Length: 123
Image 1: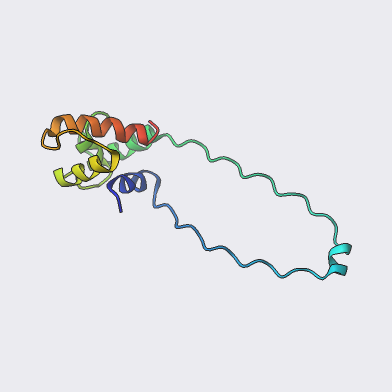
Image 2: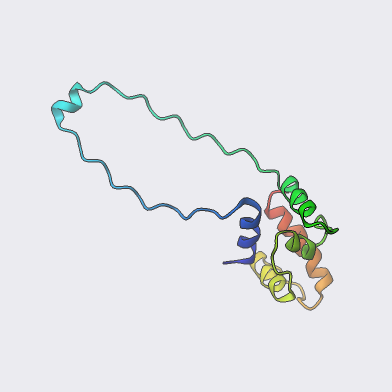
């Protein structure tokens, strides 16, 4: 799984795998179909309410019992989500998100990562 995928799962929970298509019900006999009363069309699905990522992260940070500056630090953000903030994982995340800077300049990369992770989360 991608590092960004793990970040999303840590915030929103594990996303279910798409279910296999259910088999089509058998066709009704023509006489039975003619006698059946019309069925109302199903209502369109209700859009999901937006998720307040900031509130979720603030709550998770409070539960850690230590000061973590997840609002500006990618390392602290990953710690809040119980993810390994190692340089290797941050480099993987940088590649996933399209970072083309110097991965050895970790300060610049970390600032870029935090900005892009938060933007991709919709914050």
